[in-house]
Image 1 (cartoon, one colour):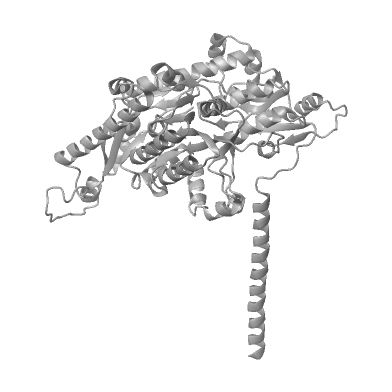
Image 2 (tube, one colour):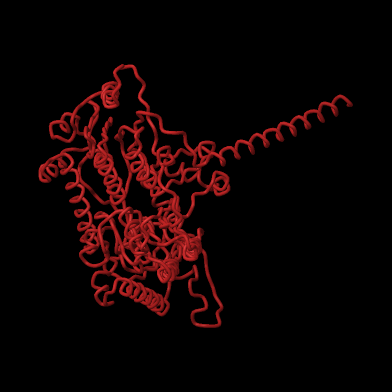
Length: 591
């Protein structure tokens, strides 16, 4: 018995000491990660900036340093980092060129266009750009067409088959289980509700989608034709046959690529570009993240132009998101506090709000709009629209001193809707539940699960939506210096591209983030300034605390369901979302 107790105690002490040692090592490792966050090694001589055109192009990096330990793999490219890296690479003598790896990149057209412009600017430094891919998706080829040489694997292909928009409709599925969506909206083109009440696109929605889709495609054709020295008409004709199942010879004969070659031949081309004489010399590659973090010799200045990144769905709080699969959100409560801090910071002379959002909560959008107005009273506010700044995204933009957008930015969608599910048929007829009620007043049981809204309740909800629309269009009219009736003529929930928005007064100028920053500095009358991104990224410890328990499960569901994940995600989020929404059409897939 004594031996048993002795060995048991020894085991317990051993486990305790091991756990203590493990905890100490973990704390030291974590401290080391925090200390090295934001640091990078110096860029070596003859380095090649490698950009992998696969995964997803996102506004800012949301990388979690612990993701790999939890079974998550990041496959995204930060647009913020990529733009900064290309700017620094052009000025860094140790970076000799850019190597683009073709692939299947998912990117909003406006964001892709801004990255492409940065590649064009990089080439003005006199340095080279080479692209190679086993295959090129549409976005990857659009970006790679900038390159001095576009190379393709002999067994590869180029998918440049035009653009298509696919919208998923849920009405019939919901009817099968006895659920109907009670919808209240203002705006002929406000099509966000259509998936829940229709089985196909309405004529108005088809009209607006056709309009902005062809506007985006025309811009892409023009950009590629200029880089490849081709006629737009020829390029558009090639798009009828260049798909993911076409062969490499078709791309070569059509002038889409310059040469068919294997990886070993590509390495030989890169060695020659770098000036290596020995064919066995190792190529030196550097990453977007390392170049973006590399130090510059710029003069230190105190005056700032703040660049505040507002991207994702607009919610009042993190618990009221409609789309559960979005990694980042514009949380109204947080953004208001952040803008208040920028308003009171004397070193910040102007603020550029970088908006990339399909919209969301109308209530949260109104609160953010108010804070933007207060900020503008104290210092210049300029908006730079990214991939989209529509509906609520336009709501929070319209008060700015000046609005910049890419030609392919999706904007407008000025409209309001409310959406409340009615599951009474499911509960009473299919499941067999019975409901009875005692109430003191006529509408005491409004929103009851056992019945849909009655006529009086529906009329009140529609009045609420109408008031929201009046407020929204008034905000736009005041911000843009237009008559409210004029705003309503271009509103009705219609989506426009930035190019179209410029013609109708929703946008002041076509330009990128750099253009917006330069204009903000001009308005603030500052010549020497530094652009600083806000909010500051979380350090590794803060990221660890924010890790979502459901992240792994959601990632697995997304991989399992593919495009069908949008349905699962949307249904999961409807119950928590704010009922009044200023939002773009749901989960619109552009291919």
